Amino acid sequence: MNPTANETFAGMDAAQWEFFVNAYDTHKANARKQGKRFTLTRAEWLWIWLTSGHAHERGTANDQYCMSRYGDLGGYEVGNVFIQTVLKNKQQGSWVPKKGCTGRTLGLKHGPRKPKSPPDNQPHAR
Image 1: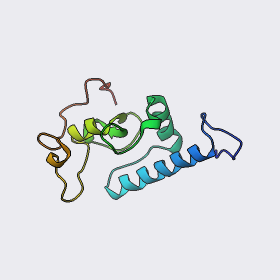
Image 2 (image 1 turned 135 degrees about the vertical axis):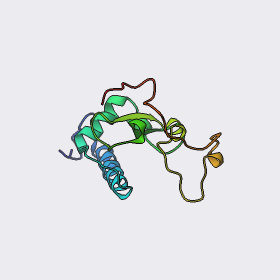
Image 3 (image 1 turned 90 degrees about the horizontal axis):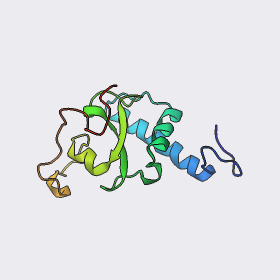
Image 4 (image 1 turned 180 degrees about the vertical axis):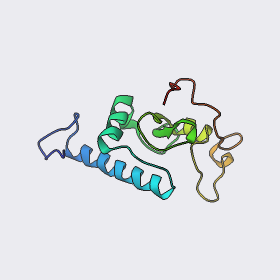
C-alpha cells in the first residue's frame, strides 16, 4: 500500500511513508552487501519499528535507535531482531566500524565486543 498525497498509512502521510520505504530498501541492501540474511518484509520491518515506539528516533547517532540482531547472529528476521540505541549496539559488538575507525575514537573503552547472550531487557526466545 502506498498512500497518496491525501491519505495516511499507520498515521503517516505520503512523505513519511516514502522515508520509511527508502529506509527499508537501504537497510535490506546494506544487509545483503554484508552477507547478512534479510527476510523481513516491508510490513514486518515497519511494524517492528512502529511498535518499538522509536521509529521517529531512528538514525546513526549514539542517542538514536537502530535495529539489532540477538548476539549479532543470524539474519534480520522476525524473532531475531530488536530495537536499541546505536550506542548500546556498538557496545555489544553488533556494529562494524568503518575502515580506519576504532571503538576508542568513538569513546568506547575497549572497542566493540561480541555479546555472550541477548541483552537482559530482551526475551531470550527466538
